[in-house]
Length: 291
Length: 288
Image 1 (cartoon, rainbow over the protein chains, first blue to last red):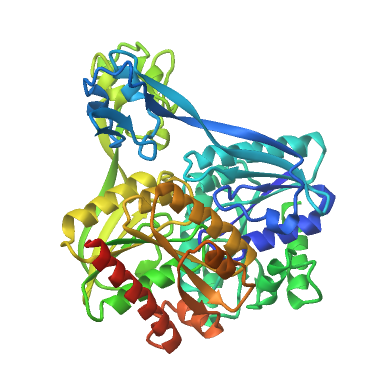
Image 2: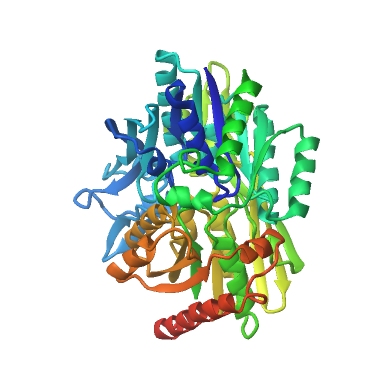
């Protein structure tokens, strides 16, 4: 079983559309994991049935029981996150600022502060319209710990893949280089970097690849909107060569990409287009590389 | 007046809007542009000023001092983030898990865990005409964006004179980094594209802003592609649509080269003017 992670550094490069196409092509051989839990969109293309759902708890937030509070102010003194305010002579926790460290609860002389576990989202295990199993999640608004939810989504997908002898896990990662991305990368066999020939695309590709290198994972790259800017396209190819990243394919700028999404389809399902062949060949190429 | 530019979905045009709006406003007024997308900061590719200040940014993490430690284990018990582990003969600290709450350090009976600064990124401050541009970049390998975002906002508040329009280019998503970037804003501009992904994610962003109690408006980018769902939704829910930026390959090409859009596309300039008028009216009404 091989784990393939699709990331991009920069958002909006076509990462999810391409990942969903791979999921479509892989069909029953594949377990799909949507690890972009902040803005999970893959379900819009793969139409999962939400067969099984569970709440996900992570982290805590302090709560002050006003009956026990003697207003000594120790909680406010120790809090490094400005989460304790005095409103109408009462000590109140601002839950948006609270990091859940529990320091205040520890120093409260009357045990007036309790730490409440937070329901930060839901995890879903579904069957998609293509017949693959999909693990996805929905992080609660403003919730912390998306790295942990990502890890949970991945582990769940891994277990399902192992139990059912699936060949691949395909993971849609999140943008950026922070904790959710680190979580998606750990344990992967191959990384697909989706970028675009724009100054931002290249800039972000370089940063996210620095991270990939730390994990020592083999990588390949798909350049979306490849004909948008020839100069930057060449620079990206030079970067790939220098870093020994496999150039998988260039996908030309084509509004079919968006049109397919608008009707809830992956690119490979949507009519006849040049894009369809390129994405299909890319998937074959990736399978060859990691075999 | 603090204005955050956020999106939910990545790649919908936050940076394009932030940089073009900053440049447009700066034709007449002082303006601050602050890039809070510290994981992948891009505003600096479009706004290149003269560097006037640069500093390393640190977060505080505990450092184990073996000679003072009695291996009582209180630190491990105090840490809610598993950032500190007591083994048989030593204490291990995992800085990436540490939230700098100081509990282990201050509760340690023998002061064996002093807090020391650890570099997490860099802040740079540039000046270009009337634009003060501040950006921070998280060192690759550092996982927590939130402390760097909050320190960057602190820097802006300390160094920028009052009564200026401050534009904050925020990170994508709806989780902790976005909350940190938008929670002190007087107004939030949510930029999206009229596609199912854009629509889905902007609804999450709207829900987030409602939960934060923020006043906000929507800008539709790549208008003309996809469908009408975003605009209809905003209309039905009485959410102001501040501007519609047309879908145009020429705009994408300008962006790809790191160029500003509005000097070359009059329609975009008009849309920026609409946003600007809206902001100025709001500024006057709020007195900020």
